[in-house]
Amino acid sequence: MPLTRELFIGGKDVPAVSGRTAKDIDPYTGEVYATVAAAGPEDVVRAVDAADAAFADWAALAPFARRAIFLKAADLLDARADQVAELMAREAGGTRPWALFNVGLAANILREAAAAITAPRGEVLSAQEAGALGLAVREPLGVVAAFAPWNAPVILGVRAVAAPLAAGNTVVVKPSEDAPIACALLVADLLREAGLPDGVLNVVTNARGDAAEIAETLIADPRVRAVNFTGSTGVGRIIGTHAATHLKPAVLELGGKNAVIVLADADVDYAVNAVTFSVFMNSGQICMSGDRVLVHESLAEEFKEKFAAKAASLRAGDPGDPHTVVGPLVTASAARRVAALVEDAVAKGATVLTGGGAPEGAVHPATVLTDLPKDAELYHAEAFGPVCVIETFADDDTAVALANDTDNGLTCGIITENATHGLAVARRIKTGIVHINDQSVGDEPNAPFGGVKASGYGRFGGRWGIEAFSNTRWVTIATQQAHYPF
Image 1 (spheres, rainbow, N blue to C red):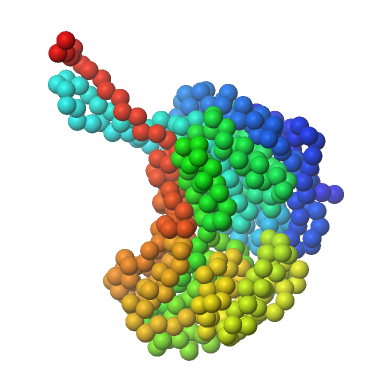
Image 2: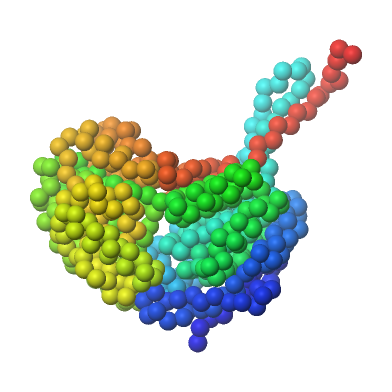
């Protein structure tokens, strides 16, 4: 029997005004896992009404009271790891290790947000006038529109709301149609149980065909004062344009075309393990996944042989099987898109070292290519699937040029046993994140997370997330009477 979930508005579970619902499909079985309310523009207005009404009291709530809510929600999430693993497998095809990683990191995002609530915020300024005191004070913006994606649903669902709420804002979140429970309704359940006041967080789920109208209605509402979006670069451009049209700040964390560089001084066996994780964790459906593996020519043959063999050994299929590494993609159409990228690459001259072929439903095997020509679509397109391409280089200049040969700039991994060498290369890579002697996938709740170029702008994490969702206000206090010329 499929689950049934309503909208979450004003602290209550309520149906859409129209009474419409949308199906939430299990990507592995193709069966309906849940039905959720399908919001219309009138429901968006109701959600913003609730968030706006709750804003003043939430912003004024004592910091330690707000902090306690976040800490309790983190503990509740940790305690429900098994429930989340079942949810992510059924809703998004996530394997158990990936789900447990989501739980652990998301819980720590909540704890970092709790710490930020009581951290010092603001500065004392030098003042021009005698006897005056100047202050730079951080203050919340108001209602924040948040968009949460399906691929790391619990991590990114929590991240969509944690910093805005910690900064004293209220939030209306529109989750992905592919994982509306894991990336929003679950988060709302946890925070509600932890004591979050009614209206502070609201969730509007929707039918896929209504997504554009829901997003535009939400961003256009004059009471919404900021936008945060994590998702594809194509949709991010649209969201960013809407925000700019209404003169609202936005944080956009978008797609990647990430490289892992294996330098000549790397340990090959370590590099193989690191790259395997980077490429195939969550079936490559991570914005930080390594699409491109750049290997120094002196190591290329050994690396290719060992890496292809390891990729071929990865079990693909049922996300409920504890031995599965490569689970299903989020939909069967997503698997067909990845297969089409591989087919196009091979038709234009690429060589398949392992994998390829037609997917089975939403399951695509781990696939490794080499000799990819520049006219193949995969050369520039984000794979967002269990696929990577190996390229070789002769020197650091070539490696840097290859790594930067993309419109995106999210993250990069540099495998080397020489940290000084790695740092020298890292300084030349045009990404928002770089990991030396590690692969491209990494996130910590206290670190500034975000990209450059077509990978977006703004930062989540730590104090940077608080700054993104608050204003700096200049306040002066005159301790003596001023003198005026008239």
